[in-house]
Length: 584
Image 1 (cartoon, rainbow, N blue to C red):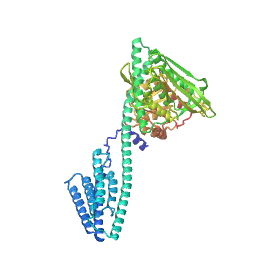
Image 2: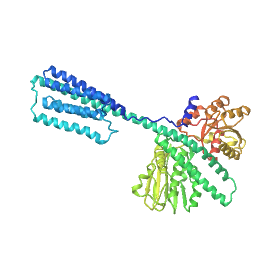
Image 3: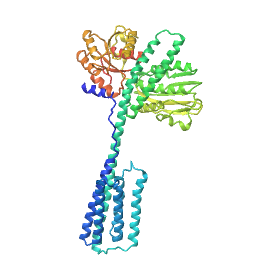
Image 4: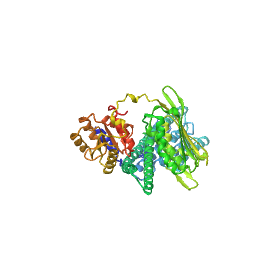
């Protein structure tokens, strides 16, 4: 339990540790020293070997080369020079050109240009330097190589070889050059894989930090929104004059719109973190689609538009689908149709395309007579943060997230969003879903009186919430449903209330509270009163993993804030109307 508490406390704290993206900068500097030392030791070995086989001029040139390499390494170590790489590359090229004049091409010294070229991506930080710096190194090598070939062909070698000496030196040069080329090629692959792995780690840290930040901001925004939307829902039940009703409609529209934008941003964050999930539940498709269109009828009427809803009678079946995500898809599509249509109609069409023994295929479409979308823009509208430009108002409209989220949600459901549109002639968005029939038979569920009524009369409910406004709103709504509500402002007060009167039918408990939070309190509640169902009541982001952990810790379900009164009523009745069973 302590691990769960710490885990979900941390999600509400932004990680303020600085991201430390190295991009192999330190490794590049280190590898340059390593190359210099490897070149030095190779030169020493060649100097000794050429002296051993009697090529004293070549041995002396190699020794001079080694001395020059040693000097620039020491100067770099003392800080007298800044760019060690350019000195090493230049010295190696001068040495190879000089060797071509001394030995010609017959000894194979020119082959050392190949490992030298292969070493450039390893010792030069191509990801940080300008392209011109890279071209300088490559240019020096290419020019030196050409000079080496020309000199080797046109200048008589200064040192005479015996066939035995030539064979031995050529063999050694070939072996060292080919081996070095292979080593540098393998090293390049190794360091690139290391860089990509490091880049992925840092990218994930950026995503995780942003996820934690947005989780915190989401909680902070949704908490006051819960109070605003709750009060608006309470105002809905009161009589208002015409002017008050106008103000009420403005408040409701603004709060709902703000909540939708907050949810879109949080869902987009989940998309980038690859944490967006689908949670199927049982629902009646025909009834569900009727409820989907209901909130929009008044909005379309106020704009003078006709909202046509056609639902195939064959869809009066119970299926498994994620109702929350489907509502999100239709809200985005209907909101877009409302926004971009000034006259005519919007049609929501739901048809049964195919029925099988275990599943049904349903076709959904939303058609409007709005401004339409030009063919060149039809792919762009599915991109994140891309906005439609309204030529009439000279404004960009929308956040550009709604359709991106719809596409990703449908992808998780095994479908895709299809657009047919023509500029100034409207648009039609459509998609198909294969939905499994629900195997669960509601007739087998035991009933009680609370579940059969549209209220909570006779239900004793313990409401645990530290925010005064949210407590007031939730209590008002629940007492409006005739529930007997006992308030508690933290986990310790909740335990005291349970000890005093342990006959509560259900508990709604916030997670983030002072004194004793919900994560700690649920452990004590389940230990003392395991038969009482407890619903987590939170404005935090809850993904599948967190929901699973909440259920494992003792909660039966999770109610997100802001909430709709009927949604709250439905969830409470769900756990009053059947034996205690965790959500899976």
